[in-house]
Amino acid sequence: MSRPSGPYHETGPYLEPLRILIRGALSHLPWWLAEFILFGLKQAWACLFGAAMLSLLVGSKLVWQPGWPLYRYDFLFACALALQALMLHFKMESWQEARVILVYHVVGTIMEIFKVNVGSWAYPEPALVELAGVPLFSGFMYASIGSFMARTIRIFDMRFTHYPPFWATLLLALAIYANFYSHHYLPDMRYLLFAATVIIFWRVHIHFTTDRTTLHMPLTVAAFLSSIFLWIAENIGTITGTWIYPSQKIWHPVSLSKLGSWYLLLYVSFVL
Image (cartoon, rainbow, N blue to C red):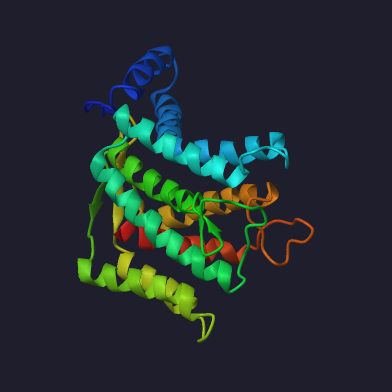
């Protein structure tokens, strides 16, 4: 691969000055190493909302006292609302992206209510801002995934080749979402759904701009790699006791089977 000669991709009014500063500081490095570092910077910027939420989970767990007048879950809800408002106010997120994130928030909250009430996991602390036993900050954890996907598509100027018919991706997303409910009563179809993701998306490549270089990656590989990071984030959620699984009376890492759940859920969010 030769040194890129095309124009760089701008990243917006807040990240762009930092990108230019870092690009100048890295001018003595091999171009591929500078591109890799700037790729990491843009990924971190795309993860801003999710990283802030995880930081709040950890920080609040470390300092929160049972006697305080505000419940920790309600504090997290208020912080999530404030973060979303700030990102919109400072144009770090567009209203179009916010609408997509809101849909994902609602879809995630509905699933949370079902899963908590069938005993898949639980929220052990009290909350005033809750619905059917589910603290409403939890929807923002799903929204952070939607935020990352919307922001990364924009920040990396992503394009998709050989994209399948939309109706096929919509049917797949509906089948995945339905299986999260139906497997409690019917046979789990996840292995068929894994196969369906590969069959439908195997030709799809994501073309993305790191800084001055456009690269590509199979969408199925990107989904699998993203599911690993979501599994790590879920372990942060359980180790802080924010939510727990029935088997975690003594904490242990979340089952690796959850990687598959996150992998499938990413296709739902991608279609959204």
